[in-house]
Length: 256
Image (cartoon, rainbow, N blue to C red; front, side, top):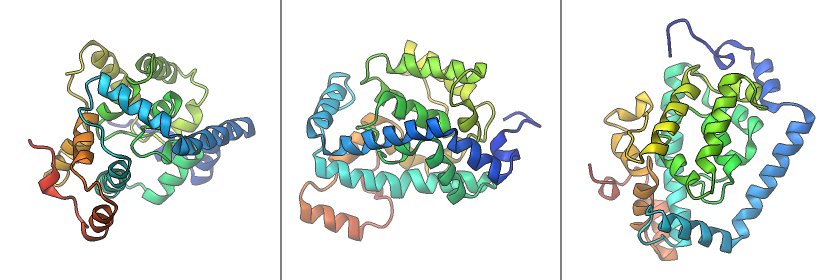
């Protein structure tokens, strides 16, 4: 972030941020519909199977994890990676983590109900990428590849956001705290479309000794899927893992 640069998230009042994140009544109704669709996807087993098969075709998955491993892996991703890395980042910015999650929910509630993204629509993944300064956006770009035209849609919406013509520019602007984030993300998307091997822009706080092995494990889709596949596959083993494992299991981390 350049010196002297700021965003609505860091300058506006709490009331203004809540109002802008919520949007108009019509926008709130559309968000409610997207949330209902996201919740309904959880009971559609065929959709999940189809997504996993598509990821295998793309070369991101060798042996798909079981549904139980996906559930346990989702919990681990939340408690060891998504939440602690975000709390650390927002603390460094002087931003209240709880209030920020309220803003995220108001902006796009559907983006918060699917931590792995396997059941999310293109719009949900794109919205999530645009509203959160990502620790590593590679995972979400790989998710978008399973949708025809997914990466192109992300690029289109980022261009609209930078041009000020995106329909959710105001609500997204109430959340993103780094003014150059969308420009950096757009540059990465364009480079990624040319080569999957393009190095992703990592958020500063996840390169630390504390988070580096966890980022290496959950920062990309193939690595995360390998972690899920190493988790217990029996109900008893899953319960034992969730009850006894209280810190990131380093022996299951992706090798350096």
